[in-house]
Image (cartoon, rainbow, N blue to C red; front, side, top):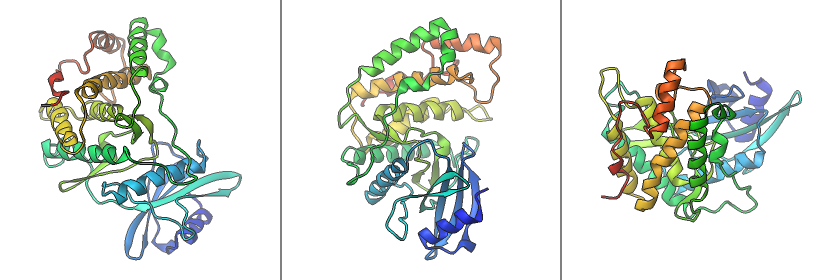
Length: 328
């Protein structure tokens, strides 16, 4: 847990009562901790990252983008500046550096594939619409004066060296990466993206979807952000315990929502499955079951996954309708 000294430093910097501060959760990496606090009768989230890998400038760049999106009406956490007007600040204790930032707490419920109210066509549509608005406004985003630029994301960095023990998969991955690396990078296709749009990173608030957890944002193709979101949604939620299959509903209604607010050419829509397959191969290369989360990769399952990659199948026994990846 974070020390009273650091929480006190945060309270002083943001001007809130330390007594209102409550621990929420750790991040995926234990060095990230989240708290809530109250200021002027409003709920905020305090994020503290110990021994961060990046500079404080990268955190400020994340906050700068979030501030821009929130001002444009995109439902993302709006950053709270410190009393000195900073988007984030660093503090040290016992030789350890911590980056501290804060933003409005978002209302909403977590997804649940077994709850029809929290995993349905409306959720998929509104999720896609929110992502579409994020990408649409980001086209015109320019970092503030003196602001660092967020890093560029390398699709190649997703692949573990373990992939080389599977020669056919490694060859497919290399061909796929070479194709991706030749794709154009222009204002309409390439920009700052969320980079981790799995279903756990949004909240459902009626017909509104609130996107959260932006600390992995980087520059890449918008089609990759979509492909990553769709692949992870299918990986985690393409069917429920009752046996209902959501595969094509997720794809169709996410894209309908996205395209209702943000135009995308057939060329780029056709590249989304390419990025989805890249996500599958990346998970496989890291020793994960790239079709069933939580499974142990037995030798038999491993062979099945290799065959599915060789046959360009995203999920065995679950056929995605590729005609959905074009404008109607």
